[in-house]
Every structure is written in structure tokens, then in C-alpha cells.
Amino acid sequence: MDEFDPTLPLNQILQGDCRQILPSLPDQSIDLIFADPPYNLQLQQDLYRPDRSRVDAVNDSWDQFTSFAEYDEFSRSWLTECRRVLKDDGAIWVIGTYHNIFRLGTILQDLGFWILNDVVWIKSNPMPNFRGVRFTNAHETLIWAVKSRRANYTFNHHAMKALNEDLQMRSDWYIPICSGTERIRIHGKKVHSTQKPEALLYRIILATTRPGDVILDPFFGTGTTGAVARRLGRNWIGIEKEPRYIELARQRIEQIEPYPQQALALPVRSRKSRLPFGRLVEQNLVQPGQILFFDRNPEIRAVVLSDGHLSVNGWKGSIHMTAEKICGHPTNGWERWFFLDEQGIFQPISILRQKYLSNVSIENDMQG
Image: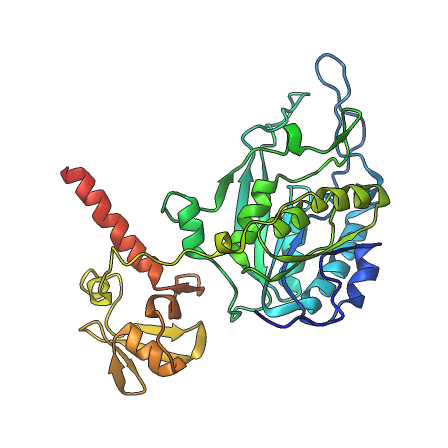
């Protein structure tokens, strides 16, 4: 585990506008950022159900901007600071709706972030479109990005497979909206109009951090990020402007009982389905002469040979032997060697192994 900067306000909520608070955090001190910024919904009037009861929609002052230009300036300001405090191998998740996510995506790319995925959170119980003039808005979009294309970011692939009945996790996530006892209410009224479900943060944190990592949420709200981070043995820092949210978030997080340390161990790949790398060469999933890259580093290359071995500067060996020679200790070559896909994005060769195993499984099912 990395040593923490002693100036980091770990496991604390900092009150204020994140644009003023973020500059107080040290450079490259954060492992993961989850940001749920204002949506800029541009609501012009109250919404009503067919029975004329008013919809408890997002009409808070913090979601109101005079123009797209003002919203863009606001977004660029906090995202610039997020980039500064994020470690070079850290990552950021930004969530939004069609009102703002495209603008945020453009700004992320303008600032030099490299987008890894857009994930669609599909709400299994969305609020209907009461006026009947549009499709029911049943999803939100998350952007997962890193500071550069070469970032050695954390992705717990096997944990996601384990969470998904040993199938590779897809980018469409079916998760209910926050409701029931999880939804924080006072006198029956929702405290926060856009409170996120803990299941959503559970998946993000489990997928892209390790125990002990530091997670920053610059729009902390009622503390969902902090609650899940505490449960999963991660450190957190929250920034929140509204005092009424802060006290509720503190109370909520204090009641969380962290999982026992032994329960936080991340799963490792099962050896029951060992597969020689040469099998992928035989099946033309990898071609002799193809270039592989060690840990996404374009300077450390290997050439695939026809017998399934790799050649690194004239030295030949298996994917595991060559990886061990480069890093100086035993390691899993499936997780260290990468190829460039058609979009020029680094992908682990383990994806090709999974593709092969999936094809074999389908063929066996057809024959059975």
C-alpha cells in the first residue's frame, strides 16, 4: 500500500465549493475520483403527474446555470483540478444524463484525459415521462477515464467476472434507482434529488480500486461514495457545499460497519482452465509477427512467433518467461502483455483467451 501524504484529509468531508477546495489537495495524491456533478437540467417549469400531484424533480439551486457557457466554465474548472490531484495511474468516473454528459466528455478529452469506457447505467425502475412527450429516460451514462493512454490503471477484471457469475462484465449495468430504506428522507420527502444507489458505487469501487486506496468525491451529497468506500476498506475524501447534506452524510457513514479484512481479498484467476498461448496462435486469434506490448509500454515490445513463444530483443520464451525476464520476478504473462485493437487501444491478451474459451463453450453447447 502506498504511503499517504500527511496533509491529505482522509475520511473527512470538506465543506465548500469544490473549485475552491480542490486546490488545497496535494498533486497526484488521489487513486480514484467519482464525480456526480450538477446535471444542468434546464427545467423551465414544475412537472406534474396525471393526478396533478407535483413531481419531486431536480429543481435545486445548485443545478441551475444561466447558459451552457457558464456550465462549461464551471466543469472545466473542477475537472482541471481533478486532473492535477489524480495520480498518473489513477482514474476518474463522471456520471451524467443527456443534458450534460456529452459536454463533460468533450471537456475531459480537451484536458487530455483518455476515455476507457462509457458505461450505461440502466435503471430497472425509472421515473416515467409523465407528460408523454418523450421516451422514458431510463439510463444515465458514466465515463471512465485516465490521465493518459499509457496509464497503468487498476482494473480488477476477475473481481468483475466473479460478481457476474464468471462472465465478463459488460458496459450496460442494470441497477435499480435509489429507493426504499436506502433513500434518505426527512418527513417523507427526499433529502437529495439525485442520490445514487450504493450498488452503483460498489461496482465502481470494487472494479477500479484496491483496499486502502484514496477515493475523492467532489460532489459528495449525502455520502454514498464515502459509505461504500468505508464498507470496502478504502479511504475517502468528500467535498460538499450544502451544510444540510454534510451532517446527514457524516451520520450515515459513522453507522457503516467495514467488512472484515479477510473478506476484501480480490479474487485470482482459477487455474482450472489453463490454456497455452499457442492455442490462440493456432486459432488465428493472435498472428505470428504480431507485436505485443509489456504493461502497455510502447517501448517494450515482443514479436509473436509461430510456435506461440515471444521474442524480446532476440530472447525467446513463453508469455510468462518473457514477462518474468523483463520485470525480474515471477508474474502472469496473461496480465502483462497487451495488444492494440482496431481503435488503437491497449487490450490485455487475456481478452483473446476469454474469446477462445467462449467460442469453445458455444460449440460444446451446440454439440450437446
